[in-house]
Amino acid sequence: MAFPEESLSQGEEVRLHLHPHWIVVFWPAVMAVITVGGTAAAAFLVHINVLFYIIAAVALILFIWLSLTPYIVWRSTHYVFTTKQVLLRTGVLRREERGIPLNKVNDVRTTQGLLDRILRCGTLIVESAGEAHGRSELYRIPNVIRVGNTLKELVAEDLDRHHLDEEELRAALKEHREAGGTL
Image (cartoon, rainbow, N blue to C red; front, side, top):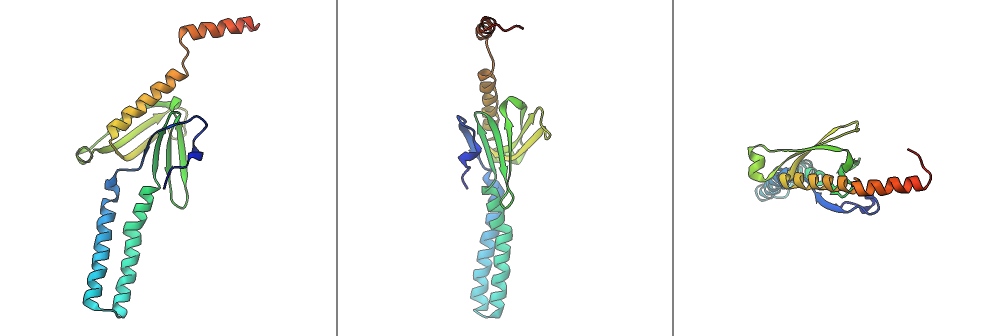
């Protein structure tokens, strides 16, 4: 499921668009193989009769519950890093989207356990100011160190874009005074 461009404001560019690490769907994939293999073995051993149909129905329910649903949830979870914000989008039937403006980001941290380091993933923690939910944890981010560094660069670029240097400030004050404004 692609991330819709309608969620972006004019002039906003996507720098990174990620889903959680593939390890999230590893066990659901194993369960899919077991379910399909078990159903095939049942067809071979039981032949086609009422017992086979019962086994196939149970296998279909298990496949949907243990394999297909986690895969759909994984594909519908988006972590999007743009030139203006961090967008977190989750949900299949009921969608939730949350945007954290880059100018509100106070702290960016990454954490990795041993397995995360082996798999090259981890948790990205984004702390933001002025938010009801001031801390967002993005789990199982692939290449989490690189993503964290990219987010830090985006925050720095946003700060530079909205920061006036001394000459720009003097020019703005001069223009303001010439227009008859007072301080």
